[in-house]
Length: 362
Image 1 (cartoon, rainbow, N blue to C red):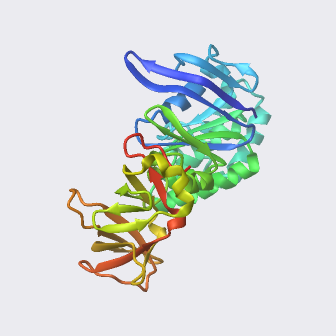
Image 2: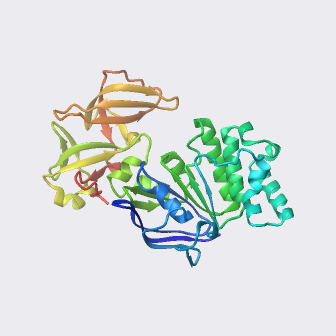
């Protein structure tokens, strides 16, 4: 196992910059997740670490070794791809053994590693089958097992669960978590799925347009997002945004008023009289006839069993009118067209600059 350190890594394709000034260090044995929207550069970072892409500038270390000029086959990393990449003419056992045979590993060692990996991934009964005889989840476990059997310094996983159905994705995600707890290899995992990022990661790297937006543990990033992009990307349903004007004492959305908590006022002195974006998560909005902050009209009701997701429009002259996502208890059953009186948890209110996206109340 080893640390992975990126120092101001950039990757450019002619006039297109895929990633720029990427710097972070993954400590030995930790599970880090790179997350962000499509095109943010997360797979490019992973492929650069693997040696499948060459960094245009910057320095990349695996352990204490600078590997910018080291070929992929000599970096001692194992990569698991989105499409499994199994050899269709080989059995499961042969697929598991392939990487070891390419390194001229002793046959007895190969056999013992295959057996150990097959037991840990519950695929020992599949060793004689070909990939076409396996389900998607079984193929994914074989791909993971092939990487594990090599015992590399670093695991790189590029959206390995995206081809699985929802139930199997949940099961395989739990297996990955348990596997890492047993093996404790340095792991870098790429996904656009925020649930995978939140549940798997020791640390999350949030990316957008080739730049790092924030690095931190899942709960810190959720509770203290650095900017509007991070705030709205992590969380399901996403954080609500409301355009408002700050007058020094309250946020005004036309005729409706949300009082500004005292804790926010020092950070908002420079925003007085300016437009701001208010952020509030769906679970921090409650029905309340007394002391309501907002009125909104229900447009969609989605029962989800343990909760109800309501979408409601805040009436304004501006178009499109802002939509609020609200999570309610299942016994509350508003109907489309109902007008709701809403109270916000002001302790969980975020304020963003609408032009830069920076969080003003950091």
